[in-house]
Image: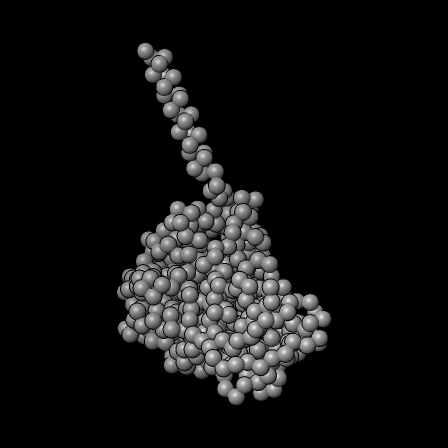
Length: 485
């Protein structure tokens, strides 16, 4: 009898282990070989346009940019001088003392979400924690968060609920890893950074060339998994410092955990990284304030800001025009990329009118021409034209204005969209569609958003499209092209 029970138990154990193995076979393991099986989800490839939000305590001093909490402790910097002049010695009034002024008293998540939806965005990525170490959500790992201090509200929770109502995909960004060194200037003189009472906020405040401790990296991992578990974001965005070699094992652990959570939720998830933060093919590359010069086979993203000076709110930013952003969105999409466009709300929770106007102008263009953007894929070539595109990061202030002779292509099914990056006042010649180029015989051309007949002729040296007196949208014009079978 004992033998029979043992045999039954042994058989059941083997059976269950076999089933468990089958169920977990396709799950991600914490090694790069396994993580290279990652596939970018269609929702991200289709979305093309998202909103980034830099909002935190740094919006209170609102001076220079969102790196104020670091630079105010860098002796001799403009921020340091400004801090002394306006607030006094830094051992008496430090960055922590801005927190009570960060009240968010006019913050309305539903209003934000409605604006982003009207702007044509498909996903939104609020900063959950910036380099300053202040969490915009309820965390069990630190009292320095927006629920226990400042606004006394779970900003991320409110935004997540509001985005859901508008069918916007929730993403979150974590800049926690950069906090390792962010406040280190305050250790070099008498400041509140060296006060033990605030070590859990300002610390570690170590040097950039020091290897992070296992305790600190473990804290990073715990904060990241906490965000995933609490809010189920479908995108997690990391800044550049995750490329530190010491973090390698922790990154693999997080990626496998997060990707497996995506399988559990039955939702495609995305990790954004910069530079060499992740091996190619294991996550989605992000290029800050920059672009690529050609099509990238794998999906990628540009994170850019509506302002030239800062990611967070400052009262004297210089704003990019909606035309600049629309034409760059088109250029990015033609090369298999997405645009994540940042805004910086005021400390009271209102979004500056200039930023709202820019978003609404982009949305107005997308409302007419969105079929050439959303759900599209790159063609055999991204485009043509006289304007040279500068590739790489931090080139947003070097971008040259596009012309109507600058054409970008996107595809959807058998349809080709040719997008002129300015309003044509003369015939547009698309050389890529010349008869001698062999890229297909054009059957018909429509102007997206208009019923007006388009006059065109496909010649040996180019497809010539005649200008119209009126176009359905500003900034860029979309031609919908079909080919003979």
